[in-house]
Length: 284
Image (cartoon, rainbow, N blue to C red; front, side, top):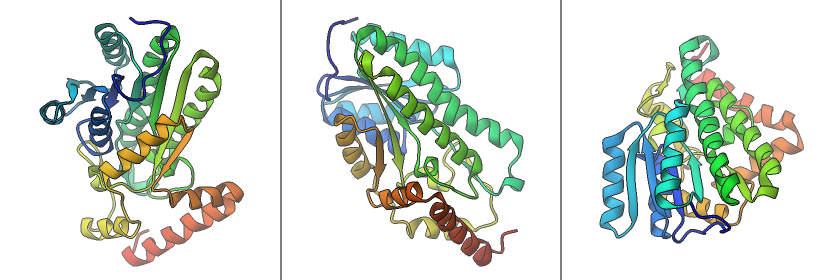
């Protein structure tokens, strides 16, 4: 493995993207490849990941797909070590894999909670821990964790997801402070609403609510979802600048600022939106 080097932005960098087969992960992988990075797409959906890798290769980029369950630390550690050893370095890991079970607290069972905690938080911890050891030893690297605006403010009807995203924000900002003197960067991406499969629950999640799917999508449309490719371009530009918290679309920063200024305002915004949904859809 190379030592005494510095991080590459992004030409000839080596990057792992978990959840790379679809949505934000796919868009990040494609944009990384366009910017000259060699990308490892890690995902449970191996056929989809292989298709994405093949498309990247056909466009002149460098990519490969690996099937992995991010909740398995041994598998994640093995992937990180093999990547760094075979390619000589690890510049980036994007801990992006995530799932959602949306619904009211009384509609969610403990299995829903455990699955979301395992993927959304334990998966990020696994990727962070495994890559940090490599990056600390080589003296450079950037850990980029995908959280959500739900990790910065209240988000009713989505408690497991919201709790884990708050945890990802706390982990990322704390490690950023701890690891900076070692040359290891840490950023957390907090998307607002991005047009990805997770808006409908995704492959491994589910929207456990009595709101009809088409009406639920209409609620998301009111928040003007950003296209994944646009998101990836803007997110990677912020990563290149080593931003600590990356909020996209940028207008969501207004809600973040208001919530920081007064958490009461953030709670009022969430409460009013929830009250509207309860009334419109006769939720209990």
